[in-house]
Image 1 (cartoon, rainbow, N blue to C red):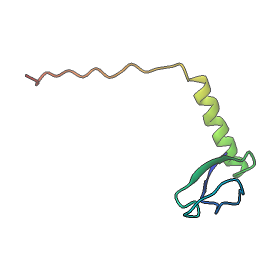
Image 2: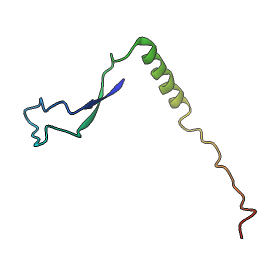
Image 3: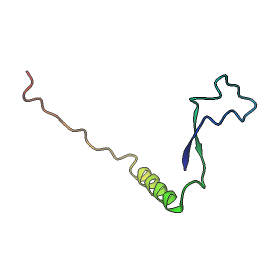
Image 4: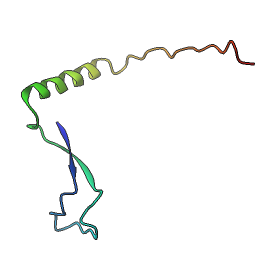
Length: 68
């Protein structure tokens, strides 16, 4: 699962910051993060998205009967 990593304090020697990385956010993927139930729920949502990725609903048609 993805988790948000915020301002790790600059543990990488190749990166320099004058404000100790305040405001720096990084999304990090960890396949073992979360409970098995949460991972199963995320996997089900991913599969549902994958199956329905080309299905589009028709846009709502609004009439402007009172418009002049």
